Image (cartoon, rainbow, N blue to C red; front, top):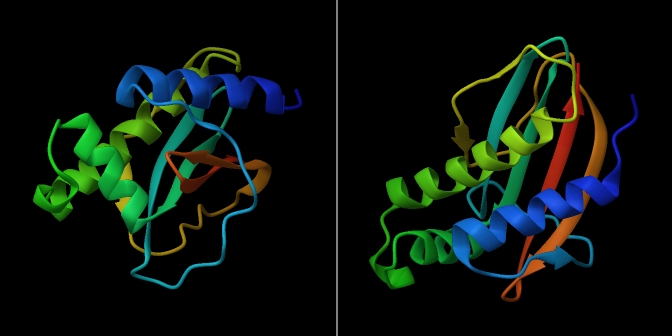
Length: 144
């Protein structure tokens, strides 16, 4: 089964709309970032299909997402809240992606890191860049 990018775009758009009440759309490629400048949320999928969904974004975008999710000012959001928000976005997105694959499939708990996430034994199936409120982010689907 090949992964359809149009479906991934729909999943991202609906997740950002429902979770943040914001419009996300395909954007220009995200600029390379150094460790500490961005966060990556990762949720693995196991079962009849195995892989992972990652959401990577600069810290400013992750902080803005957390502020929207928790109805706070960006400067008032703690690092834990930023990590929780990005993990929840990755989790919601992975839940939608999981519907494309044969059951049973299970999601892991989200993991959020401040560096590149490598899921052992996986290759990139799809990788798309998006923009929301002038903040860029990258969504990757990895297949084991």
